[in-house]
Length: 134
Image 1 (cartoon, helix red, strand yellow):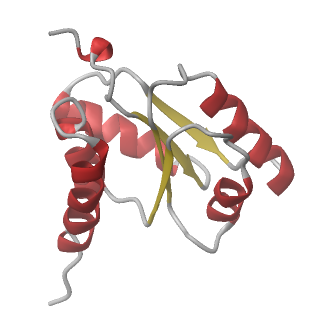
Image 2 (tube, helix red, strand yellow):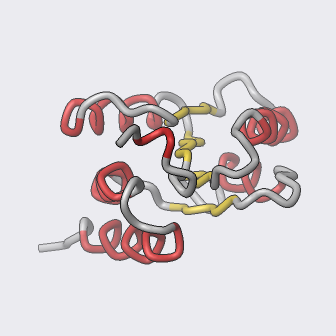
């Protein structure tokens, strides 16, 4: 089966500070292989308003029937704020903050097989489970 032909297959967009998103995606691809429908937006060189517009443009570049998951690093940082302010219309867009490697590995590993409603709680669980203090 061609993964891009799965209608519910979500598109992942990492909206992060500096090169964090690029490096997270590079690491995911080093583990799982190349990933289609994965995009990175950095806040570098953007005002908050311009970053929101860039997010809107990226989301509107995705076919309307495809859900989009926006991953941000900090909920209260410029990327999280810009993501919340972005106008995505009636599209299916979910926003996940506190992105980390375990969460992204789960997303890219299961996005072809699980519906979004089942995938999102798994992302939260894996993201939290990836944090330990000893």
